Image 1 (tube, helix red, strand yellow):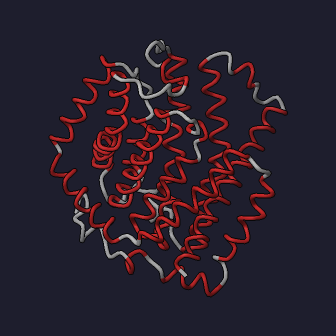
Image 2 (cartoon, helix red, strand yellow; image 1 turned 135 degrees about the vertical axis):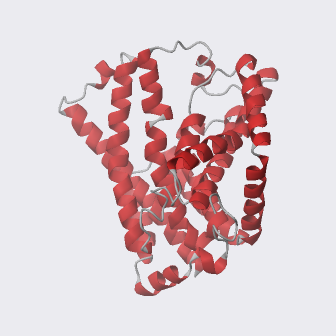
Image 3 (cartoon, one colour; image 1 turned 90 degrees about the horizontal axis):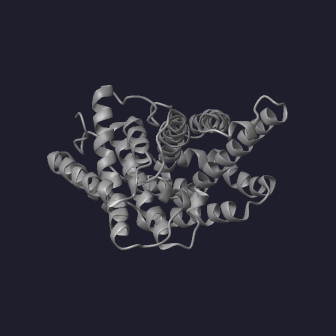
Length: 347
């Protein structure tokens, strides 16, 4: 039954994201067709591109997030607060500080990778990465960075990925499994990483690690705020050159050393969670999510075809027997790790 519940959870997530993307594209297309937004004119400047990007993101996630949270409540009786859309009983200042430390820990492997690449090229990378070193920071470019990378994406993606996806996967897969599978699904949805390039694929792996860390801290704190902060800081485009990378990596290492007691405590708690994880089931979920999402991104089949396959699977979760078993399959029963027993932040 746990394997069936896992299939249902992954199918539901894919259906929600599919419907959100289709609705978002439809709303944005109607705005452009009506003349309310002139995309060609806006894209002639960074400020205009920032506005077009913001409208597109808000159209997509403005539909997807309420849909996801509504489905989560109906299927699991999990409230938005349980999904991390709150402060988790902690002060905002502590959560912001936790987000800064989370950024340092989660982004360090990727910065080390770029440091190695600056000395010994690993691959070609994406086209935009090399442009960061020469890009002039104008007001328009700052608006574009905020809209396309550092502000809106974290604010809109974290409620979905570290909120809805992680919480929806927690019952069938446990805490560690939900962190890993939600990270894999989230990153495989970024089609620009589908390149046969060693650097791009290596960055993809470090990004999965970062997403796992964001999901873990979301569960530990009961809030997506640290993940939003870490995501936003991680998305700030910086020159990938030695004069930038060397002091950045050294500063990150010093920050980890300064807060080593916190980092050590979380690593110990994470090891306990990973040891308790039902790994055959978790690997099944990773293969299931990746095996379904990669063809969707690469082949771009008709949404009707995808929905025709996934909707019946997701609908299985609404059968009375399956739903009752899903409500009983809580993480606390299978993986008795709680914020209090693990000595989570602020406890």
